[in-house]
Length: 482
Length: 95
Image (cartoon, rainbow over all chains, first blue to last red; front, side, top):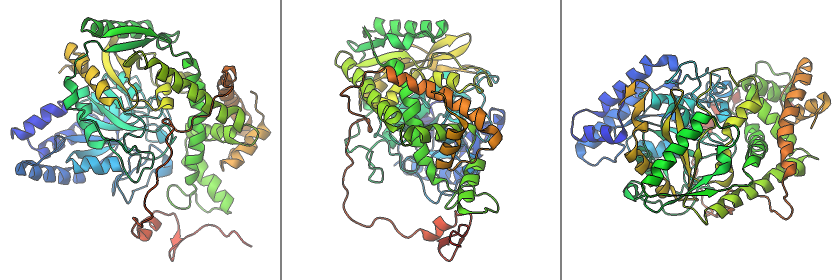
């Protein structure tokens, strides 16, 4: 069972262990947990070589906090020389010739990648059942899904294979699997983390982030990956706060908005009561709970499921069988090369979203669907702006339910989309949010979502950290308390 | 909004996806259900509301007009299904 980043970093500095030993143990744990299907690719040789370099840096005494810590990358981040599939048959054999900025920064900090985590194909899904490489199982109950799309990342951390994993969040893909797997998941502000080398799904929503055991660990990883990147024009040119130093900021007097729409009809009783209990604990500690309303919340799912597929239909046009990715055998014509390569390479959900997105962008429907969704997007962003005039954070359940059973929703796209009801609005508004473990319902983990104004990650992490000083939910593991 | 097989065929052509004739009706029903979801947007009063394309309404910044890329042609061509002599190969387009 892996410990936290802080514990491993301390052990490394005390010479109680080495980066090579930590990498070996993580690789062993990955093999022992193969039934979870959390990883698509294990990178034994490159992991051990990176661990040796980390040990040399540690010996010199000049190592960053993440130096020598093993982790996994969601298989959406391009890794130079290591296969990057994005969970798709389309990229089954794709070995990128370059590293994503997030990959480069974590490597520069000395962190050791042991492999690439399973995910829903092109990050489209809320259960990890859309992966070409098979579904991931939830370490708390192998009959249940880990959530998605960063399901492999969440399962790898929850199962104790690694102390942290990278993920991406377009509509909840970090927060919802973190909630389902009983871990902490941080989606930063849009533009805080470079998207360069992160395979695109919906470019105005996609956001790289982290899944770990605690808010403190998330702060260490965000500190390493945040910041402007000249190669991503949408990454923001503004200073990066000291997230780790800010963790000690006290909750006292913090105004937390409790959005009534986030406790709506679809929220299971056990989930709602666990989250209300968590909020009561924050209140006892000195936070001020304020009832608020986000009046357009019920339009977030329809707006998201027009905007995200529209952007996807455009982004995924690059998979044409010509330059990289799957190419069909013996194409009869250029048109046949395009359409057969794409039809063979993409799975059902990806095709569904490309089709609906193409429809929403097509002549005659663009105004009624795409432009209208963008106008509703502004109404949703305005709701948050209005609320943040009165409160410092907004809270609610991350997901309306606990982890559901494999196969339970996979034949009904609309039921699956409803799993994102409390997360997608945050992406539409580009805000940072975190899911922290907040109890159990029917023996399965429940996540509390906290949302902050743009670029207030330090406030978000400090509040989550203080909650984790009051509670031990984040220390529970599928194998018992840590 | 209901959608018919002809529309599905048209959209699939635009998206360069091949859908077998026998599947068109099923796909039409599926897409119709997704459009019912999208049709809920019609309930919103969006009069006078500007579309939001970028979450922070951020205009893209300028960068200096300098060459930063080095030549990766060989590494990139090596990813292609078929390439020869520095070119990507596709089926013959001009008869």
